[in-house]
Structures are given as C-alpha cells and as structure tokens.
Length: 55
Ligand code: SF4
Image (cartoon, rainbow, N blue to C red; front, side, top):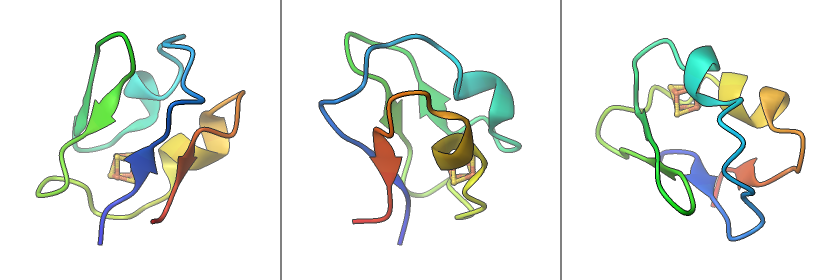
C-alpha cells in the first residue's frame, strides 16, 4: 500500500523534498508512484494541507 495525494493538494512542493525515494511527481495536483513509495509517511507529515494519507 502506498500513500496517496488527495485533491486537497495545493501543489506547494513541500512533500517532494521530504521523499527519500523520489516517488512524488509534480503536476496540477502532485502524485505518488505507488511502486516506489516505501510508506515512510514523511510526505504526509510535511504536507501543510493534510492532503497525503494512506488510502
Ligand atoms: Fe515518499 Fe515516504 Fe511519501 Fe512514500 S510515504 S511518497 S516514500 S515520502
């Protein structure tokens, strides 16, 4: 199971620098590569909008 980014994402970019495996991609809403995510939770802790969680 990988973390997912909801439509609450404001594309601020905070999470990208937190991911140890570079699983997060930029976009209008950012996204997480489910195959690369190691479920560390670093991005979820960093998101200022609470947009990242486990499904
Ligand atoms: Fe990257 Fe960890 Fe977030 Fe997965 S949970 S996308 S490994 S920072």
